[in-house]
Amino acid sequence: MVILNKKGFKLPRVEREKFILLIRLGLEYNGQDILFSIKNYNNINQLRDTLQDILKSEVSFTQTCIICSTDFGCSTCKYSESCPTKDLPFSCVCNRCLQPKKVTQQQLLF
Amino acid sequence: MKNDLWVEKYRPTTIKDVIGNEEAKTLFVEWLENKRPTKKAVLLYGPPGVGKTTLVNAAANEYKFRIIEMNASDARSEKAVNRIAVPATSFVGLDKFSSEVKGNMLFMDEVDGIAGNEDRGGVSAIIKIVENTRTPVIMAANDPDLEKLRPLKKVCLLIRFQQARIPLIIMALKKICEQEHIKYEFEALEKIALNSRGDVRSAINDLQGLSEEGKTLTVQDTLALSLRNKDISMYDTLKGYFATKSIMEVSNLLNSSNVEYDDLLMAIGDNMPRRYTDPGELAEAYDFLSQADVFRGRVGTENWHLLKYFYNNLAQAAAVNPESYKSFEFISPPIRVITLFWTKSKRTLLDSICVKIGVQCHVSKYEAKMIFVPYLKLMLQQKKKTNTLIEWLKLTPEEVTFLTGLKMF
Image 1 (cartoon, each protein chain N blue to C red):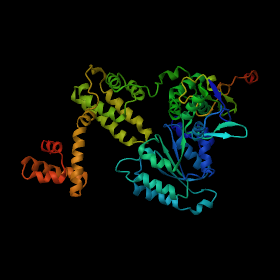
Image 2: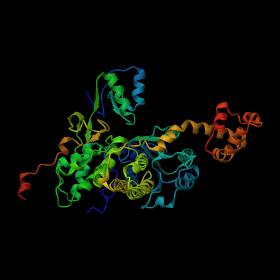
Image 3: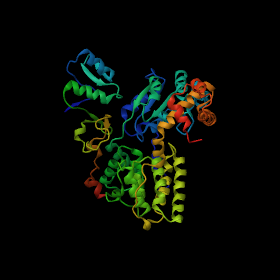
Image 4: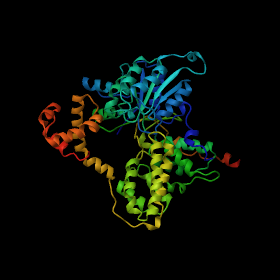
């Protein structure tokens, strides 16, 4: 499985038609950094299929934790099997932020 | 504690508080702040209970817009849209310059529900409004792929909403528990979130239903929850419904069944005389059923808070006399559905005849059916100078045979 960072990722050179298709599906290309990023999320399923076709591997996008802003993959989530939207959209809560906070010794004393 | 619905009490008032769909929220805010002025209207689409309406309300609150709302309970014909939406979108009120309100925002909820004769011309009227609007126009739909919405999609910026993730639902439940001072086991919240299948509204409702003040919410408490959207067929629903021993049992069954409410109501009505052989019990059961029907009508497509009364009356109809149950063979699907299925070809034929009469006689299909068809039938049966009539109306031999043997008049 290939995990892509939605903010910027590299792709192998693709033919013109494929490139146009990727742009139509919502990718943005930054020629300076030679990086693709996701601009529009409406056709994300089709986009993922196309990327899988190009990379010849299953594609997954990184998630950003809405609490601590770290990027993480869905494969680390224990709910990935029962998740209604799999790895889309791109914001979630990471395992560390989700777990109940451990009560410190000092808090126990009070 | 249980007097207020938590869904309403904790409804987000700012965009930041709306759970999930960060990309959709960003796009929407950019559009609202006029950073993407290519389209004058926006269409939010996605499954129910994911925050489309909540986001619009939160945005209106945050950006100080006054919402002019038209939803599925309003008629949305060309006339109705023009009467409400044109004044709301064509004029900029003086209050735009006040600090309290920044102007109007037209919100049309459930636009995929625009249908039939009642809403004739509605879509084209909306398109005209979008072209001439001076205020934000927002629409929401569950299914944007409908044929009738295609012209609307061309003039709108499309924003897709996804179901809420389980961790996000857990976070929302945790927040509510903290504010309501409810102690909880993390696993209990986990179970509620998993059970909700991405529907935040139902998760919050479940939490409110299970929690009690001063008591810790445990995994044991959540065992009473039945999985939502479980695929229970009509047959199994009826079987469980009629064999029920208590109102509670039937309530749980109805909550987990995915049978259409109207089909269920019809099927129960059809089978009731087989269930209750005692006339008194049957009358009582039908009384509850009629109450359920009244509430189904009131629920419509938006007053879902009344659904509990619909279920409650259905449950009471099933539990009039649980002891008298003897197994019987169910009538399923409902008689009305079967009748409609068997008569479909006949109705289509009659419709095509009425259209032909309508074209020649300048009358509506309904008038043709009610006034012209009975006489036409008599004339055809008497077979006097009928050839001219058949030619003039351009009736096919099949249609002539059908009309001659028509039994409905």
